[in-house]
Image (cartoon, rainbow, N blue to C red; front, top):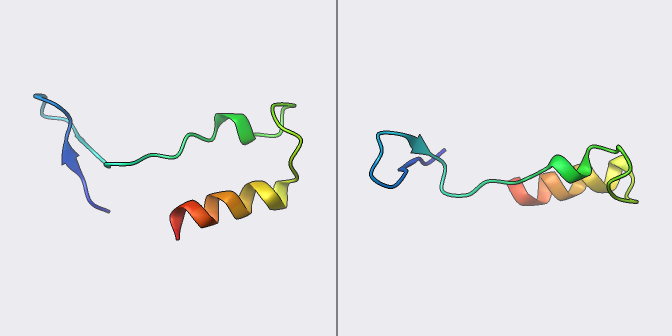
Length: 45
């Protein structure tokens, strides 16, 4: 996976991330686990 320098720091990070805190199934969204996994797979593919 490609990494880029974060600002003027020495830290190397991926240029894009996927925030998934809301799809943990703890009442944050009404979607099924299958739909959540499909969304993650689509983001990665």
